[in-house]
Length: 311
Length: 326
Image 1 (cartoon, helix red, strand yellow):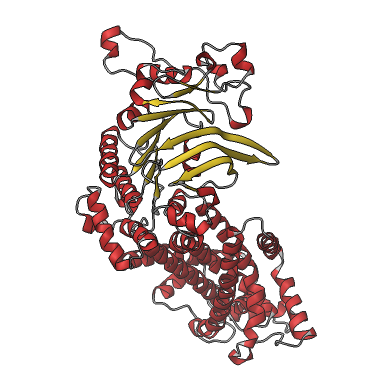
Image 2 (spheres, rainbow over the protein chains, first blue to last red):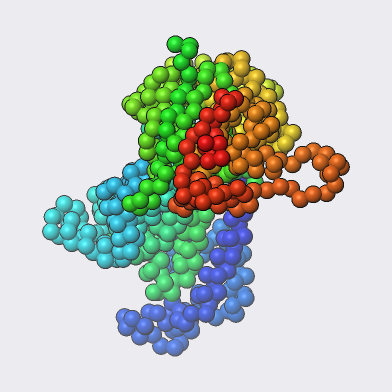
């Protein structure tokens, strides 16, 4: 088991490197630098001499291969560089933003799992019932609603009209501030989980071993508890792992909308300002998070399903 | 009490619902099984053998349902039993072995636990007691090193071993009736004989009656005293096994017997084409008018095409459903 985890960790290394290279290339080809972005938005007009000096200071006038070499060398020592904007180490900048994003991602996935999985189970156990019909219509709508719009509607209803919850901001960690953005972010994975769970349960319901279980004289409740759940769990867990990635990626929109001080809003701000070290660092951390969560899912699946070999 | 047959099936009809219409997938099926007796049910795929067995254990699921007739087990009509009482019978007094041991066991549960469930469900055992009983059950089906094997998952066992586990499950509670639905079809020929011997031996030891379902006439002849032949949802002939072989009455049975390849036939008679019954079993939605076998029968007449034959008793105690014997 331990060697399985170690091997999986080593496997992530080339992926991380490839992602790092990709981000680097992307930011070398898009136009604009930190210096030029300052005059872009009209805040200040910098003359050519100042721009050149800034570019030199940040090492942006070096050839691409020199910059890439430096970047990889720094990465190897876990040095993500220094933010152009705040002059703080990137690692520090990201560390400050990681927790709010983790909170948001876990809260929205928790919401999606706690509601979506039971809904999928109920729908599958009563196919064609009103629970099934309504929840599956809901699931399709949930998948197709734009998160941005949903977030605005939630704000309007629960903050502005009803006044139950704060509309935006972090509130210094007050959990009430977490509720609306988590729901806005969690609806899509909830819908997907409900559908996947329903499909998985329905398929397993028709499996031969479920018929065997019934032939033993088991009640439907015991069939579900003793035989169905474990089999469905493998599929559900895999979906959860993949949805984590989507959630972290889409947190960008929701964080911006709710002024949530997480990695997503940091990323958007840094892209606008061409604060390239921060952008590269944030994306790397997001990719790492995704890989780690999916590794965790793989380990859990291997524990549940003895047919999955630790290779 | 002992004079009464264990199982009496009368005019069983099984319906297949397709939209608003209902097709009778199985019709007019009547037979009885006495205590400790082994009866065979043969026929090609799709003639209704398996769903008949599923009806007997109360496991038909939509779109299949019992459309009429009675199934009396130990004097009680099982269709009229409440669900909870039926669950008490299922597994405990009527057990079933399925064709595909690969998929009939839960892949994520150790086989010992899957056997142990029987004792927990029906004998009120605790899980600990049940696990111990599972080791004994596994030993009784001659799985070597049962105390280690109980911890194995199905994928760690061979097909034959898995089918032994299925038998251990089915016979765990010493049922009165065992429904064996093609129990060896998915297995290697060498393993088939072992599994059949095991079923025969253990059911005899526990006094369990067996309904052996197969498309393999040879196997049925080997295992059973009495044979029912099914075609397109109807029982077309039912007789003692040796009579069926010596003098098949129904043309369909005759075709089945004739299509058995004989070992050494090529040496004696030279190379010959294997005999076959031309055509296929019609689908439920397109059962022909008259005798259901008439389109494939070599001796069919206008009467066969118009009139459904009734059951005719034969002098040897069996019956046949064919106009030629009326």
